[in-house]
Structure formats: C-alpha cells, structure tokens
Image (cartoon, rainbow, N blue to C red):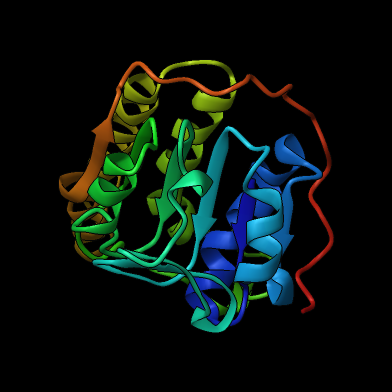
Length: 215
C-alpha cells in the first residue's frame, strides 16, 4: 500500500513523484492527502505485501498527513509489518525504526538513516513531477521502486537506486548544491533484512500525466 501526505512543499514534492509514477501501479491500495493517516493506513496494511510511505520521519517514527504518526518504535502491532517489504521515503527512519520493523518480522526495510534532502522549485507546487531539481534527487528512488514492482529483489532495487544517485551526481557537477544533496542521499540509503526479498509484480501502465495536485 502507498501513503502519500501532501501538506507542505517537501511532502507534495516526494508524494507528487510517487503519485505520477508509482500510484498507478498500486491502485487501489493508495491513501493520499487528508486520508494518509493511521486509521486509513491500518485498514490497507494487512493484505499488502509492500508498504511505501512518504512524509516526515524521525529516527523512531514514520508519519503521514500533517505529521500524524503511522508507526513509532515500541508502539505498533508487529502483525502490520510481518512478511512485508517496507520502503520509507522519509528522513532518519533507518536509524531506529527500520531495524525495529525487521526485528518485528518485516522481510526488508529500505530507507534513509539520516535526513533525505533535495532541492525543490515551488513553482512546480501543483505538478511536482515536472520539477527537474526534485527529479534529479528523487528519480533514482522512483527507479528502484519501479524495479521492485517489476519483480526484482530488494537488493537489486537498492542497487538501481544507488547507481542512479551516482549517475545523477556526476551529471550535475556544475550545480554543487544539487550534487552534494544527491551524494548525501546515496551515502545514507540503507537496507535491513533480506536483500533477496521480493513483492508481487505489478503491471507497468503507460498513462498520461495526472491532473495537478489541488488539495
């Protein structure tokens, strides 16, 4: 299932990218905007083999819309994560929450053990998927998720993500701030659990760009 908060510029940027490229492959298991909160999240978690959430995170916490808590170390039901692959596109969750999810039965966690940083252009507020700066940092994450949904392993997904970070850093050598952001994310992308874990493949869909985010 896919949780997409869109209440500020960073969440609209990250969630907008997922909305454009990943959500069509995961329908109907998508909660977005005001419904990206614990009650709705918990309804869709049990049947899903793959959990992907954007938002603001902390070392021990993942959140949804308006930073409403989704999971906190020691305060969630392990049955929600057992046997699942989990990808958190949130700051810091790889420090404590990611290992804890695996300890409680998740097959694999992929995320970041420090801040996830990128540059956004607020002129793309309604269509964040068109922002070239965000795409340079978030595009490799999208590519890794696409590979996972194609049936590749978590380890292969992470390798694709890291290769993308390396290539985009090289391609943006004339923009040091953007390059350093990409390299920082590369250094802090982490995987815990089984690198050979997979999820049920989802079909690729060729769809036109979605309507603007108006929420």
